[in-house]
Amino acid sequence: MIELKNISKTFVTPSGKKTVLSDFSLSIDDGIFLGISGESGAGKSTLLSIITGLQKPDSGKVLIDGTDIFSLSDKEICAFRNSNIGFVSQEQSFLENLTVLDNVTLPAFLSQKQNLSKSQILSRAKKLLSDFGIAQLSGQYPSVLSGGENQRVLIARALMNDPKIIVADEPTDSVSENQTKEITRIFKALSNQGKTIVLVSHDKTALENCDDILRI
Image (cartoon, rainbow, N blue to C red; front, side, top):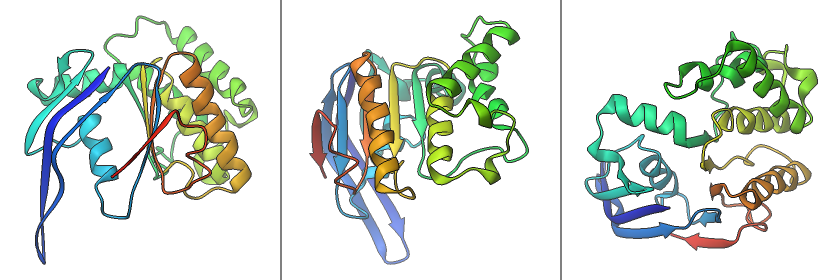
């Protein structure tokens, strides 16, 4: 379970202070596919970055399966996130000098908990690419992929360490409606397998398969 308790976050901008979250609380049960929508600047991406431990709130707590993530050191937060949370960003956050296969395997090689051999890691990565219908892209570099291919690779990479939680920030922002439907069907299937999915999107099509939608 994900629990946010009394979260507040304020930014200092050239025009003054801007509060995007104020005394915000939320509980997300395991296996839920939650959609988050709202106007630009409402705090959707900030909320995701706080859930994943990438950004610390000014006040409040984030508990994931009982672990207060901001009580951990920066190094411990990174290790916790790599093992427990798969993050699909709206930006194509690949290492451009690595192949698709190398990008997908990277979280496993960085993980402190994965007790897998190199051959097992490669086998799992290839299976994920095959499951998403992009096995033929394993030797390609990110720069030659289409928008839909990019997103499926990002999802595969997010699943590499078999995390319980998948967090996605506008993952369908630059793809077609058909690709949007395919990507959200993937998320729904993962939710049906027991994974918790938190999806930020302004696209109604992307939110159609969600179990619940939070508007902020």
